[in-house]
Image 1 (cartoon, one colour):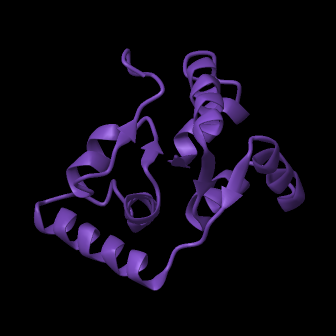
Image 2 (tube, rainbow, N blue to C red):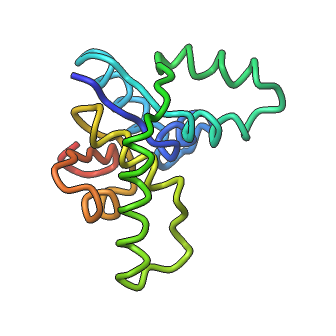
Length: 138
């Protein structure tokens, strides 16, 4: 089982969020026991912005068991199509193309996506299994 992880879940752990951190940590552990945990360069960049030193960011993500897996050209184009669909449907700029890149990567390369933003990803990436660590059924 390959699980992609969104930056929201990683931030919950790295910031020791009192509300979401414990469930995020459990979900990461469960995902690692089930197989691999991966994230594309967008997630690595978003999380990297939290640290003063890139080496600290890499070390923290490595300690969580996260593997770096960059996007392909096809995934990037899929993300562009999904973002265009979102905008045609009246979507605001609240969602940026980075969100769609994360979704396209997860949809094409993994078995599921671990995120707290489940509705958005389900709406634009049909067939993507989305796991919310804070959901009662998680």
